[in-house]
Length: 227
Length: 51
Image 1 (cartoon, rainbow over the protein chains, first blue to last red):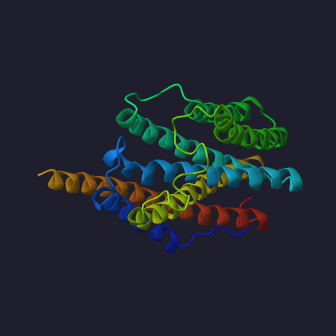
Image 2 (tube, chains in turn purple, blue):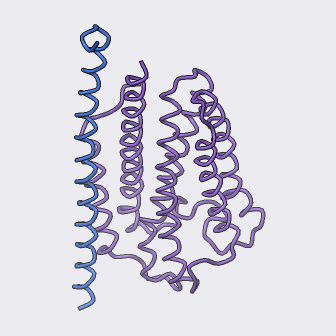
Image 3 (cartoon, chains in turn purple, blue):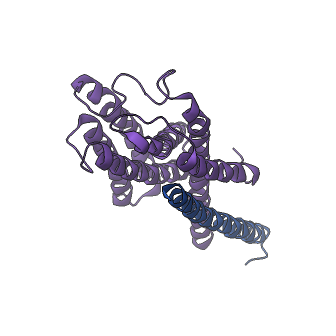
């Protein structure tokens, strides 16, 4: 797969996020009880979290492809995608904590959805630890790929299944995703929310591609030095 | 008054974000240059010039 190096989609992503920041802070939003003006955080918190899910799905795809074809580039792509996912996940957690402080009175509450998200991030941090513990490149690639598949499934269980089974979460989204359900999101918010989703997806892909290309350069330099 | 302050906050965030984007474009340029340089080195090595 030829890597996309064109500028147009990066400029599009930049324009979208600039629009989201401007629209997110300045456009009208419904004044709901409890959340009030903090509802504007939906463009950042949900956008970054979905950006993370998208890029972790990309990582899963490359790990499966690595197990099928054993190409070192696929392992590098999976690693770059997980790194990006961790960054977006950390940003998603931080924006969520700020939101929680305003609506629930504390940065962190003992909630199955929040704890599941934190555990899910730890599962992906363990992926990085696992990679660091194996020296041999091929063995590391195979182990990491298998673990990455396991990590994605576990992450899904932690953030989607367990909170729904517990049914005691105060976090929205126990019965589906409120931001994506028709009728749940105010029409005036959709003109910022959907560009936000597209913008964060593009930013995640851009960061992933930079990380992958820089690690590919490192790999090629060490190959040149070894030959 | 509050309306004026929120515009300043949004403007500051836009400036910070554009700074991050400018850095990403700079990284992009550096990576592209390294890729081209590396490709030349690999070609030289393959044709035996680099030995």
